[in-house]
Length: 254
Image: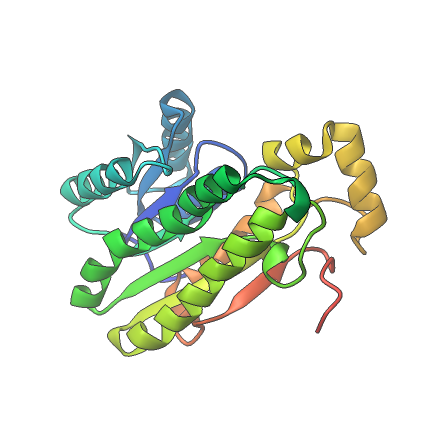
C-alpha cells in the first residue's frame, strides 16, 4: 500500500535501536525525508544510513536528550532548519524505572514525569504549530499496555503514560479540523533492550512472554512498525484520538 507520504518530513525519536529504529525504517520505505533522534549518535548514523538504503529521500541523525527540555527544543529547531518543517512525529522514549507504589521515592516521580510525560508533550508542542499551519500532520505516541491495564511493579509507567494518552486524546479533538491526527500505541511485549532490562535476561523475557501473552511470544520490532507507519499515512486520515494495542492479545479487556 502506498501511504501517500513520499517527501513528507518524519521525525522519530528513540530511533537508535529497537522499536524506534524499526518504525524509522518502515517510514523510510515510504520515501519520507527522515530525522532520527536519540542520545546515541553513532547508532543513529547507522540507522540513517540504513534508512537511505531502504528508500528515504533523505535521512539525518539528530542528538537529543529527551529528559532535557532545552535539548528537545534545539533538536526540533535543527530538524526544522534542515528539512523546513515536521509533518510526522513518532514520539518514542524510554520507560521509567520499575517499582511498586510503596517502593518508589518522591524523586522518582519527578524524574518519571520529566522523561515519560513532559518530554513527549515537549515534542508535540514543538512539531504541532507547523502541522496546523500546513493543515496536515500526524502524531503517534508510542506508549505501553499499562495505559489500558496497569502492570504490576510499574507504577510510574502506569501513571504517567496514562496521563500522556489522556492529554493526547484531548488534543486530538482540538486539532482534528486542522488536518492533524493524534494517536497512541499501547505497546505490549516487544523484544527490546527495555524488556530485557525489566526481566533481567533474554531467557526470562521469553519465558514471561510465553506465560503471559496469548500468542506465547514477544513480538519483534519489525512486526510492530507497519501499523505505526500506516497511522502516519494518508489512508489513516480518519483515524484520530485512538489508543491501539500491539500486544499479541495481552490486554484482557475489550
